[in-house]
Length: 348
Image 1 (cartoon, rainbow, N blue to C red):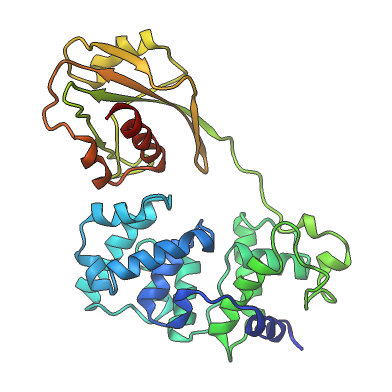
Image 2: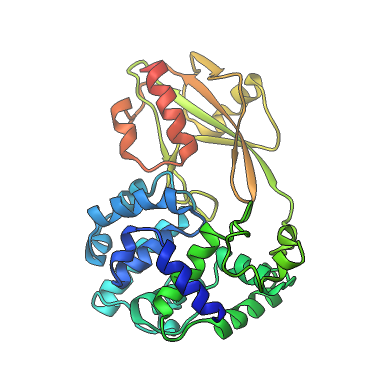
């Protein structure tokens, strides 16, 4: 039995029942694949169900406001995926009359769609022999064939794409692509893979040479950037506060947050008071104090945000201030969402 046949046989007996596997509609496949980038299936599935319920077709998604899409996405992270999702939905409706392109090359032109996603849609929706290569596939192929080329180097990316094409099943490409990804997620896992019961273990180089931990090989990441965020939570006597929309090319674009003072290092209350005029146009505030003694370290993929929330109480009545009940309407990062819960319990 060939490599691909073993994958197909394993998949037929072990595949999970997932909501996007009941259809080959490219809208559903696209939505699920975008959501599952950098996200575990268990975390992404409830979001997929919510999106399909609110936006059952690409037309509803295209017609939504961006803030509505970001709010529904809240908590899933990597928010550029949601912005690209919305942008591409509008493009599909306006330029493709609501129909997804049916070739790998045309799919690749869509914003937010890379090689992996284009291959997944092309194979699952249109039955085209395009191999998918995600983290699971890298792991399975590198272990089985004993390939020690780094998967995050340009040579490795090209090598594994070619290898994936050589071993795929042309006859059952839909099931094969889903099968090899599922195999990596459930059998050939990053830690504690189920090697003893693995149907590939007799030919698996990593297993036969007792070198499972070696694969896949990755180049080391660069240094993690350390940033210091000081959020100024302004509260007036009516219990209103402010949220500001993030703009520019930084993290969390188009999400909302409290006014932010970013510093080069940790600062104390006196330094915050001195720099308040840089961020806020208030008369002398009544009180400025840290909401908690703890520094919250919020970890993103390439940076760690060392965060303090400063309560700034003012006599000024905030123009366009937001009452507590309005805060939940705005799409915010998880870091802000968690603090809003504390704010409501402690100050409102």
